Image (cartoon, rainbow, N blue to C red):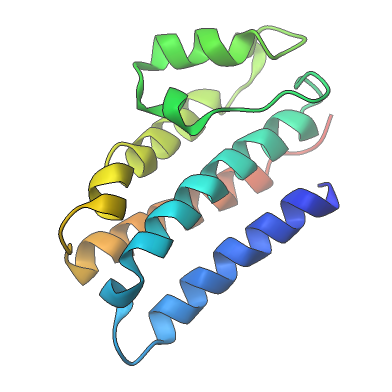
Length: 139
């Protein structure tokens, strides 16, 4: 993992840890959590694709893509890969988790306060995505 992405993931994990330990509660971190989880999901996906050796040099994934139907997301991502997306064993599961993180991002980031349970659910989903994306053996 390149240093930039490692730094991003450390920042996301720091925000999660800080939010969970804050005596004011996790809801006080709602907007930062929404942005951090979105950024973290994109970073994990890019790392996953880099580790598989399929992401074109300099290619970036746009978080807005993740709100689209899976077929459309795959089509958009495929344009930035050097091999077929269908060859990536866990891509469907990774995309499903990323979609579930991203689909409510704007409501959480810009909307009214949500419950602690909702935020914890999103954090746990991000941690599941992290585990899945990082446990892929490199090619």
